[in-house]
Length: 488
Image (tube, rainbow, N blue to C red; front, side, top):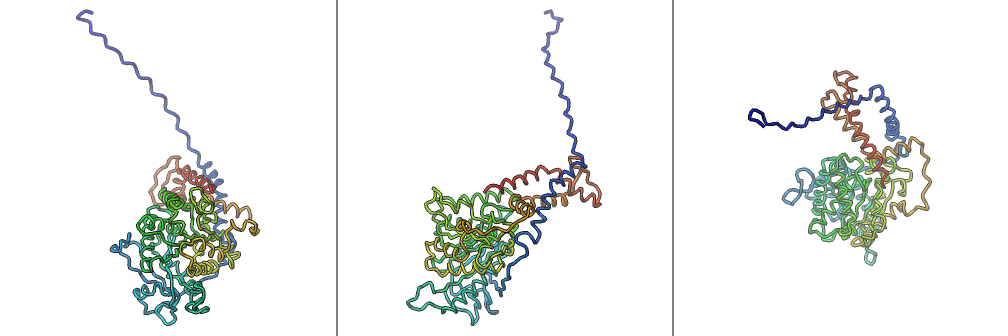
């Protein structure tokens, strides 16, 4: 190579030309998409229309009303007592036909000494009483205790009047009629079925309330807990929360009133599913047998008229009703449906009605008075369940050979039941999509839906656009609801 020649340079390999752009898929024309969605959703709409009608679930409401003269007295709870969320939640004491001059201090001074009517007046009958705690459910009020509390108060007075205020010498201690002092939790009507953090916060307060109430009674006093809807799940979690502290296990009788034991029927967040998983896993854990073995569980379902917690979801899980190799003793549990309770034949109560339906509340009140007056309460959860089964009737598992013939249902009723049983989260999801569509300003979406103007057509497009765009999300939740509902 001479001096005038330039050194040869290595040529870089040329990059291959970019591939041609892929053709964008053409959006489905509106003229095809809208009729297709209508064809798919119309059967579901008909099923929901039937499910929300008065004819579904046994026809018109056959529940008789319960009447009461309620009085609520605040129970002091604050941070100095170690109360979590003392500024958010509250605890109340219920008294039936209380004297107008009765103060909160006077009401608290009467706990353990009666549980009947007329506290602070001349009609008050002194006697022994044990605590009862009402835990409201999703968006529930603390005032929902009034039907159950008024019935127990009046009926313990009737029992004492019929047999004497105190047992005579030489008679069985069973003749001592013990009342129930009802306390009720105020959760500010929070939506515990949707949010796991809310359910966990309520659990901590409920555990504190149980311990705080029991401190006003002699050591070893049993407790009655009535949980409506999600309140039943929170009650179980609270008993487990108490077991995590230094306090020994308590003898508890828990009445689940239309409670979804296995999972929330309105879950829209993974947090509530994790709350259920933690609670149910701990409840069946053999390490917690010292807690659960002392709990008598009485489950009551509202029947077909309950559109929120269906009969299949109000039924105790099979893990509670079948023996397990991991547990030496089975759970002490019984289950009854409204229509099978003696005196409530043909009655089916919706989710709100079940807490005041007389044909359901009266047998529960009588059951709780039997439990309160039974001297075998301590360390005999099975005996308490036997008392409940005698009042509320045997569970469906105990009367397989005596199952009455079910009423005939139409195909539309079957479709409505299927929609309620297997797509429980569909309605909250559709409502969430609708709210998002109506609140969030929309622009042109994929698929060619332009949203402009304030006309009726524009408003319709405003709602339809995100629903169509997120049709895959809706499909996932619909299929998830059906698959989840099909799992026992």
